Image: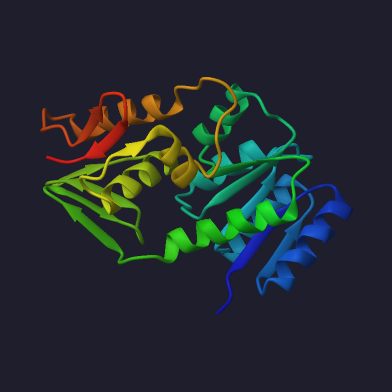
Length: 223
């Protein structure tokens, strides 16, 4: 069955244009024009991915994303916004968004992001193992030994990427491209921040370090 996409966009003409493009790609699409209607649709339609405008009447896309995550929804969320500051991007990621597309955007870019997130969710087996670390893509649960570890959506995606390629060294640019799907403007330390978050959670009980810094290159997952 083709993927089901929830689109929440208050600009009616833009919403219709994106909807028709998504339909032409073979997706099923549900559309809402305000945040509360989008939240209701998300709960009723159970989409495979959500595309949310940041500035929505009633309930912003950012708050809608937070509410979806608070209910345990793990579907990929792409934010559409005119905001292009690093602080705004970080706020979107912290709210649980998986990706960020800045208006005005090309429809080809948006479609590519949708394909990438759907493919990432479908590729590979449900469970990935490395040493005493276990990650389940279907349930989005992570365990270190018998200890359950609570991760944000982006922390999970970063760990999943590293776990899928153990012992391979990735540059900061490779991580941004493959986990975030875009690069930041300026000298952002977003990768370092998320690696620190992951290390704190993975090593909470004094477990051995698994995510290592390769000086002058990037990061790798190894024992």
